[in-house]
Length: 271
DNA sequence: ATGGCATATCCTATATGA
Image 1 (cartoon, rainbow, N blue to C red):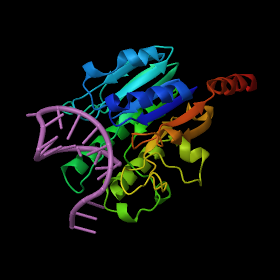
Image 2: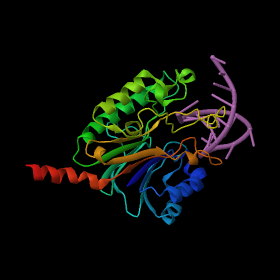
Image 3: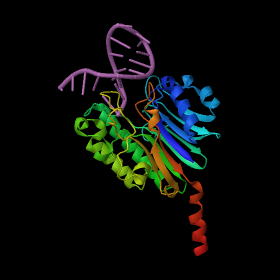
Image 4: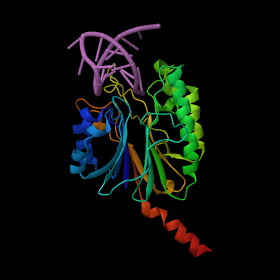
């Protein structure tokens, strides 16, 4: 099973790119962020025609998340992150797909910092950490994927120098991500590629894509139950090279769900 | 310190992104 996350930066503008990518890479599950569209303008029919069922949570102009599933209906679990009923921003969606709990998230950017937007980022992160605590030890396989808007370490950016004041690299942001991982989550890309420079985002400025001056900010986290199924992880960089591309590239994991059953039967035999 | 580019909307100006 292939699960991917893709910040599309506008579903309306990026629909042709999304459809080409779905057609070529055939992910079983695709988590989308930054729809920048109202619920009623989500292109459900075009996505259905491509073979995908979808859940979405839109918002005018900004944010917006969706979960697409090939050939099966994603079953909605929740459409908000717990902890703040006053939070109106569409940044979280959670569903059951093919026996896996999939959380799709778009963590606040937080710029400029310091300031209210950075405070909101950290508050949102704390809510995510609290909710993730209830998911990490679940007997069900869980994946939390999306645009975390955090560069975890200096190995996850081409050069931190010009980003030192950015919200994505702040020690407070990184500390939240570190605490999240410390609950027991596996950062799939970094686990399988411990030393390689791997990026998922290249901004539109200064020919950063052409120079491969990227950042790793889109992450797929696996809980303890799901981690043994991890087989491969990567970035579909070709999507970033297309005309009028999003500034993010789709990032994915390949899972062998059959592997989750074998240890249990082996344990039974041993006892 | 600023801006470079891109997207969306109450669209030739402004807010947001990262």
